[in-house]
Amino acid sequence: MRQFSLSQRLMLVFVLLLVACCAISGYMQVRTASQYSQSVIQRLSVNLASQIASNNPLLSEEGLDKDAVHKLFNQLMAVNPSVEVYLLDAQGNIVENAAPAGKLKQVSIDLAPVKALLSGATMPVYGDNPRAPGQPEVFSAAPLKTGHELKGYVYIVLQGEEYTALASEAQYNSVIKMALRSMGMVILFGSVIGVIAFRWVTRPVRKLTEQVSTLDSGGMPAIQALAQSGSAEAQPGDEVAQLRQAFVQLAKRIDEQWQSLTMQDQMRREFVANISHDLRTPLTSLHGYLETLSVKADSLSHADRQRYLGIALAQSQKVGKLAQELFELARLEYGVVKPQKEIFSLSELVQDVLHKFELMAESRHQHIRVEIPPAMPPVNADLGMIERVFTNLLDNALRHTPDEGLIEICLYLHSGSITVQINDSGPGIAEEQKTDLFMRPALLDMRKHRVGGLGLMIVRRILQLHDSDIHLVDRPHRGACFQFSVPV
Image (tube, rainbow, N blue to C red; front, top):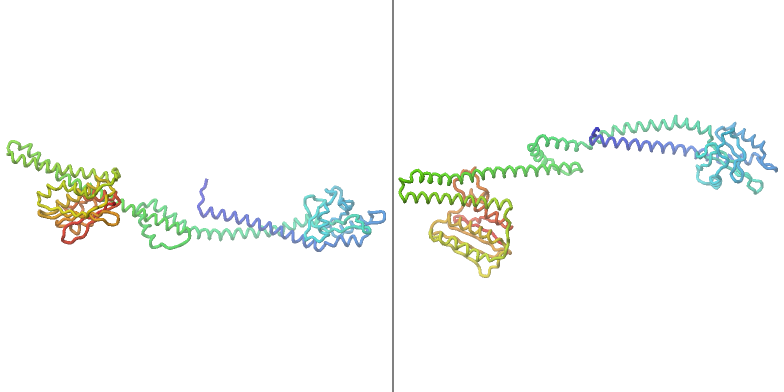
């Protein structure tokens, strides 16, 4: 089955409606013209029956004068063949007529229209046609009386059978043909104008269809081109224009999401490359020292063997720590781990975490200062996750603070949360490293050293799961300062 376009369907519906309207209009014109003609004829001949009844003695003392009736009927039919004259009794029965044999199909007349016409009803008034039952015609009627006694009626059909036949032929030859010609002209010119109008109206739809087809074949470059061109054409309009603008906005969102996915994919590739590099370095060192111990075991002294084993052990611990951080970060990013919140004292947690780093701080002669106001309210969070946050931040602070340096931990209540600030007296963080400090490490910048690494990424993800975040507080020439909040 053929599929029509939107313009073709609209044009087809328009033409059908136009034909239907023209047909109804033509029918109404023919009907109105016919009614007008019949009304004029009835108005002109409404007194015809009265004049016949008053000027022609149709009744005698014995009753109906049939000779006078036949003579009158023949004269009327000869003078005006279009009329049909009938003589009715008081009940409406036809008692005399001039119809040829077999032409009369009805033997009585409904007197209700007759009485309505005699009482002055609005014309045209239609009455029975004895020769064509079911086809009412305009008529003229007058009562026949003897004194005050009603004897019957003179009933004249003004448009008889011959007139109807001639009028139908004339109507077909003039009115109907004229109506058909006018309908044809209206349909022709209406169709031409409709085609032009619908082509103009549906032009934005066709343009949008072409753009959709272009997107289907052009892929992302076509979507990006549409997203860029849509900003220059954004302006209010009709429903089609609004649809196009919505489509352009959709293309923009697809473009933004595509760029985001492209960036994430690039970051993932860089992250994998960076992690591979970080793993390869300690693994290469570990392999080298173990291979040396295996090949030169007999020639090495006990001290050298212990030193090589210590280095290999340190490298293996580094690999293990990196693998553990990768596993933990993956679990946090992909929603495997959910916070199991509970109420606990953040002050007590800080003291517990500090015990883990006492020996490290003492070995480097570093000082840790804690400032906690009294009567701090408890917090509602995941105890293990918040402990991990403190562990990572303190570990970074101790590793980047020189000997005899100072690490400060400050807690204070602010806007329904406990704000934690961890400061160190190290060299601080370089300006070019601040922008991507909490992002996945990449190899594109070719940096050999990266502050924080996976530890800060884990910290940020944990805090995001608690509807919080970590920030780097700017303190020029005073070391690094990290700040985050935990809800009470």
